[in-house]
Amino acid sequence: MAIHVFSEIQPLKKVLLHRPGKELEHLVPDTLERLLFDDIPFLAGAQKEHDYFADVLRANGAEVVYLIDLMEQTLRHATGLKEVFIESFIKESGSTALAFSEELKSYLMGFTDLKALVEKTMAGVRLLEVAPSGNGLSAMLHHETQFVLDPIPNLYFTRDPFASIGGGVSINHMFSETRNRETIYADFIFRYHPDYAGNVTLYYTRGEPFSIEGGDIMNLSGRVLVVGSSQRTTPEAIEHLAKNIFSDETSGVQTILVMDIPGIRAFMHLDTVFTQVDYDKFVIHSGILPTLRLFELERGTGANMKIRQCGDSLERVLSRLLDLPKVTLMQCGGKDNVTAQREQWNDGANTLCISPGVVVTYDRNNITNQLLMDNGIKVLGVPSSELSRGRGGPRCMSMPLIRE
Image 1 (cartoon, rainbow, N blue to C red):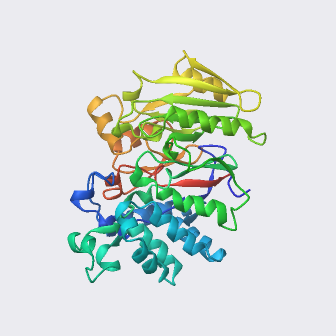
Image 2: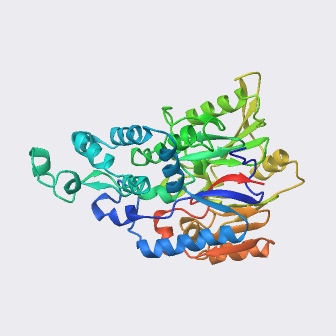
Image 3: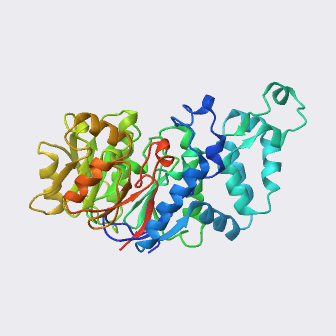
């Protein structure tokens, strides 16, 4: 099976990462808000931290594959796909890219090294690279530092553009137009890469009109999926995803638990405030509890489903769905409100479980990490001074492809 993810906690065997690249050095103060960054990371530092993260995963039995390599293999596999990819990319890169579409296409088609081509689409293309002479009003009026293809700095958060669900994937429609080009890579890989083409069920496609992102999707078990209704995932998208999953007779998912959390940037995805760390243990940010609403979507006949709001507490619902006597919710940052807010912002709740009771976390969240260890969880801390500037933690930076 090309994709095999039926759990949040079973041993991680294969995982997709993206090592931060030149796209981070193409962030400038004027574009930070539009490109969803609060600061400009130091690339060499971010790469060093990311390499440490990847080495921790390898040392614990996971095969690490990189987005750029899968995309290069995809383009190499099919004749003519390079041109189709370039045209698709330009079409979705905004008005400036369209204004210079001929120059851009000629420039990108000139790359004979496919890996370099993929890197360039990620890093961005400046006007002076495609129109150095300045001919034409657009070229003359735009400053030479203008990008005709914006960089894609959020790429190292591989969790969001698609999500593994059992033996299939959801290729997502991103909340922000800035991030929608990220899903082009996933779309090409799952449709054309020799390892995945025809071997992966598509439960959602990027052409759907409703936004959904991978940080809101969790495989609680083979029978239970959890989806967050958040700033970046709409109820309409969840309902559409559920219908597709329930319509698939090969899917074992019987229940989709929807967790409705506040739609604010600090809690942008469910996994920024809630993650599983063991069979019966979870980390949660207490700030979501006062307004948290729970809904259950249950498989019916065909695409039909039953929908009901849950009146029970989150602990009771999780216990019932996992068939456990009880579960433990550990509060990110502990009981101190200031510490809880700080460590949640620094992704203390965004843990990556690589086997039952073993998690990768950012080492900076010392209160949450100690709480995890006090509850019998083995914590593998990774440095994060630069990576954390992008507002995402170890779970955000990883997309499991195979779990045991």
